[in-house]
Image (tube, rainbow, N blue to C red; front, top):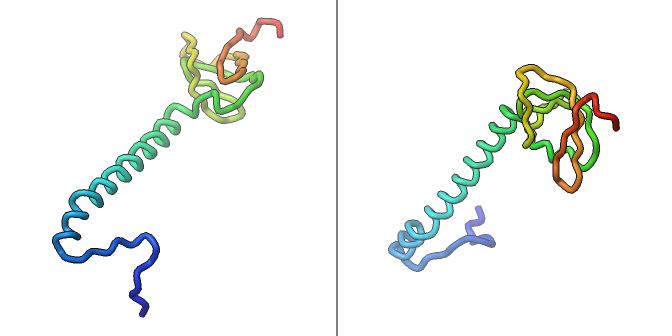
Length: 110
């Protein structure tokens, strides 16, 4: 069995030095890593519940349905910054240009 140190390993001269490193550095790094993982899990849960941001579709014109702030396009749910006062999905046209979202009524001429 090879027990030689690998790249990135931290070597200590005595137990006190190892204890100080563990308390001062290692625990802080683990807390930051845990917080980042919790934020990522929360972001994924939020996307599952509310949908991805509509800007993730990219620049273009999209015809779909919307109810409240939820835009439905090709079987996917997206969260729109523009809401409508309707509890059931209605047809809308969404324009995205340079990450900015605008919306037209279904009866508006293109």
